[in-house]
Amino acid sequence: MSTVANVIRRGHYADSVALMRVSRGVAALAGVEAASLMIGTPSNKSLLRESGLLAKAGEGARPDDLVIAVRAKSAAAASAALEEAGRLLEARPSRATDGFPRARGFAAAAAALPEANLALISVPGAFAAAEARRALESGLHVMMFSDNVPLADEVALKRLALSKGLLMMGPDCGTSIIGGAPLAFANAVPRGDIGILSASGTGLQEVSSLLARAGRGVSQAIGVGGRDLKDEVGGLMSLAALDALEADPATRHIVIISKPPSAKVAAKLLGRLGRSRKPATVCLLGARGAKLPRNARFAPTLLAAAEQAAGRRLRAPRTAAVAPSKGWIRGLFCGGTLCAEAQLVLQEAGLEVRSNAPVPGAKASGGKAAGHVLLDLGDDEHTQGRPHPMIDPELRNQMLGEALADPRVGVVLLDVVIGYGAHADPAGLIAEEMRRARRSRAVVIASVTGTEDDPQAYSRQAACLRKAGALVAGSNAEAAALSAASLAPTHATRSAHRAGSRRPSATTPSAAAPKSRRGASRPGKALNPGG
Image (cartoon, rainbow, N blue to C red; front, side):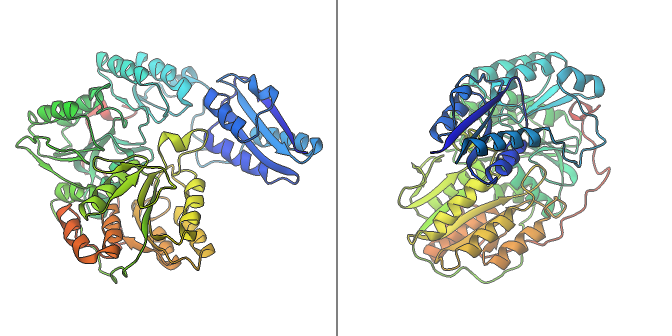
């Protein structure tokens, strides 16, 4: 009979990636059936309970405690596993950040960097609002990477930020580039004159990376969090970010990116945009009936947004077109906006689409449904108690294996998002899963969001996918159009063109991305971290 044992560390916080690594190390020990390390929030305890990992001791954990949970074949194996978990938690691995100031707590961090004017917050959602309030009260702009933050806290924090003339980016703000500094999930892009306002992290990454590969650069890229354009928040930070880009002398063209926004809030934002002196590109994926001001053009896809901002088509070398396929399309996305864009492209091609995060016109569905299903694996439902799939693609790889083994699936559609903070080799993990499923009849179609200067290098990731047998498209929109084209080539080609993509073909953009142009433009001081 198995033994379940828990140890509670009171008031102990550790990074989710570090906890994931310790969990894997402990689970690999002899005699251990399962192991998990989680902060003791009610939702996490529920996950442990469902997994058969919660013991009586763990039931008493508070939201600021760490639960070390193991299930082993014997009491001795469980005891040894808990001891090893403690040892791994105490071990201090060498890091690329060695030599930088370290601090435990906000006050110590502020003392170590008194010149800083921005705080990046990445703690469990239950504690994030308190840390953000402390930073705002201290006069710092805030970027909140944390998700699962109550909506009421978001509204209160953004109102506090506005009262102090500060930016409150987030919660669930995955990406920003402020003063040339990439924050959280961002890519290595050159400085330039295009400013981006985005309620989408991966949307911002896709557009900024496409611009970089086209030889253009970004002045500022301000993330506002995925809920900012909902009625409850009212676009509080989007309006403030638009004001900041309007005032920034380095910004000459503004790009606005969002998944389907509230019609009321979109109208308010576009009304403010109409008073801007700068030209703009508006990419509100799935929005219908929005009236654009004279200085703005509408972009139906992220690819079209990048092309409009760059002022030219983003062309790529041609390779063989995708062969006709039969079966369903199964989309497995790390990026929520990339998932939304793909849904729109498939709908434009005349396909019925289902998703756990449906855009207008798509149907709601989980991962087991029949038909063409596109899943956003970065949605809150999939990140409770586990790192985001861009950090740890384990869940996506598991689903990839299941899709490749499903005889009803004809095409698997993937996004591969690289850059700072992302997994060191996501394409390598996909290739490994594809090798395990050699007899699969499904075609794998992927795109890579990133640049050559990213730690993972765009060209290496694309080459790895091609070597494994995947078709690599030049953008996420093109990958979706390729998927549709494999089912109905002629109709899908026309539809993809209308959606703002180029003619679908299996393409790979030029591998060499431009190096950062030092001094090409300078941000406004108010947006420059550290001064």
